Length: 321
Image 1 (cartoon, rainbow, N blue to C red):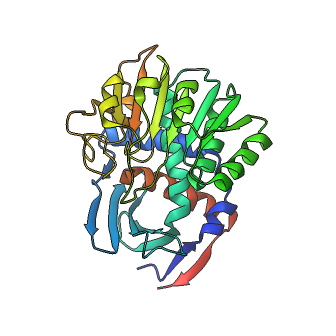
Image 2: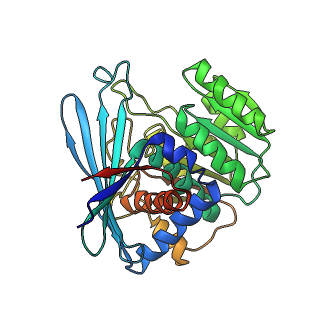
């Protein structure tokens, strides 16, 4: 049994400077392996308590030589006051021996994984030369998605921003301007939806949340990545989408509403397994919804990438068992 393991903190992961292209390619490769049975991923399991939600995502890959599980805790608004509400760790074991080999900060891996999953789907589903993107919610995920989509689409010129926090929107606007894109902060989410070729919704769950985005306002050829599972989109407008796709049909059958309940009259017909394996039909002009909440093999893909780069660069802390 290996007596030592590697710990990668959030700062360590940041110092690896994993590029958007590397992360996107890792996601695509892993879902291709998943399509042919080379990767195993289990649907998310959760325990809901009055104060927190605890979730576990498990996966394994013989090709990568690892198995991994991500443990996430999401505190309620009350319990999370003054501190990070979402906290996660990823534990990695050797595929053959079962020995633990690494522990990684889950929050930083999730930021990379989520944006890479959005762009992996967009590469198959979105207009080929979009000029505008709308970011609904301007937290850390917005910055991560801005980096990933500007890398994928040099054609992007305008970045529309909607947030309940003016300060958060201004921070993302500065980042967009530094990338030589025109930031446009708006208080009108309907205007944002109608103006953008790409829309990324990243609204966290909240007891008082009401869905407020209307898919009927989207352009005839547009792509939505609903990182929030779809909770910010009005359920009565979801029928206007021509295609409904998710990361894993095993885990999710439908988008969710503002209360995180499945929208029963809408079902996904495809997932990333179909897209990456070439078994999905392309469509030149369509309104497409890609709604997801994170599948285990995507975390495994980025954890593997991070570990390989950490070993090559000598990044991380070696810990005794």
